Each structure stands twice: as C-alpha cells, then as structure tokens.
Length: 282
Image 1: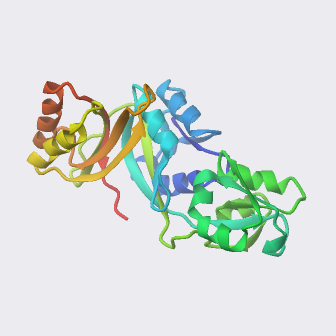
Image 2: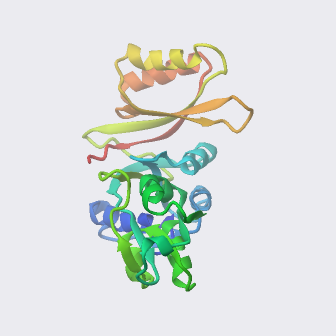
Image 3: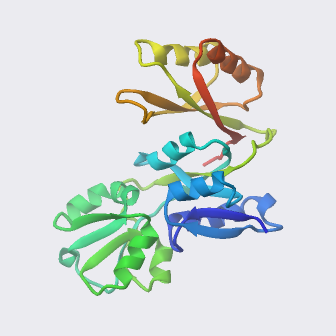
C-alpha cells in the first residue's frame, strides 16, 4: 500500500483537506493510500524527498495570510520532488476551549501562526488582553488546551473540537469570510498533461543587479504567457539575494514555456521546475 503524509496530528486543517482531496480525485479512490501525520512541514517534505512516503500533502498559500514560507523554502531545497496536484480548501477558524467561558476570562490563545494571522482582527477586538502563542499546527493547539484545565483557548477547525472534546466558543472568526488555503500534493514524478487547463510552477534565481527581475518577466511577456503568481523568498545564501516562485499558465512541455526556459538557459538564469499539473478551480 502506498502512503501519503500530511501535517498532523489528527484534527488539523491539513487532515480535513486531505480527506476531501482523496474523495474528489478518483485515481486515489480504488486503493486509498495510508495517511501518515508528520509534526512539521519540513520533516514531511524531506521524508518524501527521501522516499519514506510516496506523496506529501502540504499547504502552499492562504488567501488571507499569503505564502506558507516554510513549504516554499523546503520545496526549493529538495531535489527529487514535483507538485502533481493542487487543491483549494475553504478555511473556517473556530475559537475552542475546554469549557464554556466568557472571552474576557481567556488568558492565552494557542494556534498555528497562519491561523493566528487569519484571525488578527478578531483577536485585537475581542481578546486584546490574551497572550498569543504559536504551535506547529492547529490540531496541536487543540490537543494542548484539552489536557490542561486553564483559561486557555485554541484556534482551529470544528473537527478538532469533536476529536479533543472541546467547546466551540465562537465559529468563523477569520477576518475574511471567503478564507481558503491552497494545498499541493507533491510526489516523485512529473504529472502528465491533463488535457484541460494546466499550470507550471518554477523557482527562478535572478542576479542581484538592476533590471534582473524585469528581464525575467519580459521573457514571459514576449510569448504572451500569463503569470498567475509570483512570490519572493530569501535565497538563504547571502543577505539581499532572493529566489522567485512563479506560477504560469500552461504545461511545461508546451512550446511557449519551452522557449522561455531555453532563453533563461542561454542567459545563465537558474530555473528549477517545481511541477506541472492541472489547475484547481475554486
């Protein structure tokens, strides 16, 4: 049986999303993979890179808080992984506690940094007095407050309340109602062209000199290739040096994208293919 890793433990948004992902993708329905929780995203992606798991299901970006930097950084450092699918999952954040209590009595709020960021306005308005502490996942935060009888709360999914016997103090506390996270499935081989709309993800390293990003973007413009996303991250080699994560419309072996990649090669611009896969539709 093949296996698929995700950011655990049980009750995380990643676990909630991975079940829906599998249910909506027939290729995983006949022989469902074993689901294996991992404590952190880097450990999960490294385990996949070393073939300890067949696939890794990880969050890449959120519509409210933006990029999940640790996912992008680790994908940039691995050598044998490709994004094969993307999946958009709506995120409703809930305030959880071990028993009903007024909000003014809450002394601490635990959650993943992304969840805290997605609820910044709610926390500032209703819990300005509460200390905010980060955990490796929303599920870990829920588990933490379930075992200690203090005036502590956690931010996480409804499912975590059920799993850890917690009370829902308030639902849908995220600042943006239409809050969603883009997850990607990462494997060891490049996905085939879907026959529909595809997307290609690239990591590009530009020289630290005037106009370098302009020239990179110009190559896509020349061939009328649409960029649907561009994000920068530190290269981790020296201060002031950045790499760019780019999503473009089309499959990697389509002639226009091949022409762009050839142009980059001639200009000694480093490019890493992160994957080419079917577009997810919201």
